[in-house]
Amino acid sequence: MKKAILVVSFGTSYPETREKTIEACEKRVAKEFPDYTVFRAFTSNKIIKKLKTRDNLDINTPSQALSQLKELGYKEVIIQSLHIISGGEFEKITAQVEKFQADFDSIIISQPLLDSKEDYEAAIEAIRYQMPKLNANEALILMGHGSKHHAFSAYACLDHMLLNEPIYLCAVESYPGLDQVIDRLQKAQITKAHLMPFMLVAGDHATNDMASDEEDSWKSTLEKAGIETECYLQGLGENPLIQAQFIEHIHTAIERVNHRG
Image (cartoon, rainbow, N blue to C red; front, side, top):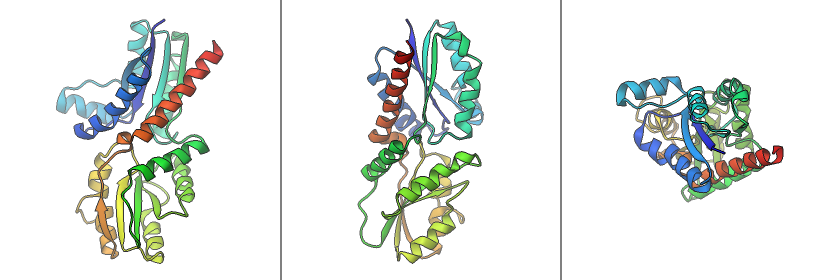
């Protein structure tokens, strides 16, 4: 029986970070599951369109990828999301997969990075693994994407689990915000902040909103508040412990397939 793993991410238009993060995760999946063929899809139509126009690169949406898998005769499909939370982008996957339920013997959607309490604890270990060594009066600020979806609470939950450490999580588009974190940093007498994306890729948000010299970037805002900064453009997809979390989720999904069988 032909079996496939469809690895789905939001996508990025930055080739260098795509190779270090999305492609690195896909290669790790292919190595771990040799009985499965690995395919790619992005959920961002904007990025898919940009890559086609700029680079003549064709990337499938989840629907297009599943149509292709059906035509190629695949019977078992596991869909692994590389999204961080089960927000709006993850719901795009579930909505598109719904139409294909009858086309495969088995089609299972595996969970994004942060699903169970154990996932949050593993993500914290992964952060510790890749973060720089902090001196006294230094802190790490993680830039999460945030969401208008109710799943945005995942970021506040992770931030809360880090309360006893000099690690703060902020979101670009929701709570907790940078202003709140600056207030906490000043109360803790932090004089230097290390900035790192808590996103799969170090793309537009990390490059421009976090690390640029633009007036309203996080770097500039912190420096105006009297806090020295150092930025790291490293997406979570580069982190072997984060990759291992996605691998573990696929193993769980395969167990579900076998249990059904």
